Length: 386
Image (cartoon, rainbow, N blue to C red):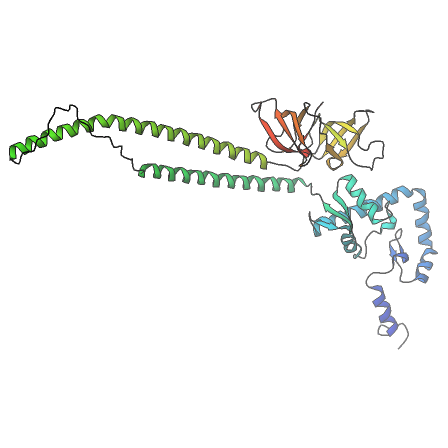
């Protein structure tokens, strides 16, 4: 049996080595060839095909780097969206699963030197939500597929419709119960004091049949007179009491409806808050200290989450994601606009600021709700307008 036979120990060892991952330093990204050891990598670097590939790359190195960077970004985001969806996950976990594929694009061939730089870039470009913790960087994929957004809107609409149907059914049952209680309510009798019309009148009793009938008739007539006199008083009292009860019930129903509408308005929130012609503040340091903490005016909103802003001081125009912006809270007496919730789009005047709860109180000054005072509006739901 020769040395290169199929079942020799050396041939079996070579086949085992060829499977699985190999060392990154023995991988040539330009030729997309993985070598098993240092000697094989050295021989590959001296080969004619490798030298020819290097000459092609030296003519336009940016083209090759952009190609590898795009491939790395596309495959990384495809794995993140397919494997984890929109869940928050550590970036190193995703990267370890990505490099588990043997034919993956290596990061040393891209424009990013480290995984941290790539993670920060994803946050700046708006592909993911990025946050830094003591345990490292965490990323969360932002799914902006139109089909997914449409499906989410349909689910929210269906959920809201189901809630409305439940509320209507509960209200109908409550009205039926109230009507049944009113129908079964027992009227409380009103007792009046019996009194003689004249003190000279005498009450006589006779055991004879005729006398008893006359006496009974007289007594009946006197009782009927007293009863007739007392009836209008009882009716009047009943009417007044019923009218008061009905007014109270109407007031309670109106108050309940208003409270339900207020509650609905508080729960109607969206994840996008950008609006044209509002003043915002830039909070990202990626653009340099020149633009950090500078105030700007939003000129245009693109796809709900991206805005073209114009700096108030210098007049420079920038394209930023809403995660890189925050609202501006003016001094009391200045004009603001509501950006989120049931009162979204209403203008108002800043009344007071509660720094402990990070909220403010405003008074709406336009529209059908003019004059209404809103308490406890969070800072992120209002901003200054020019």
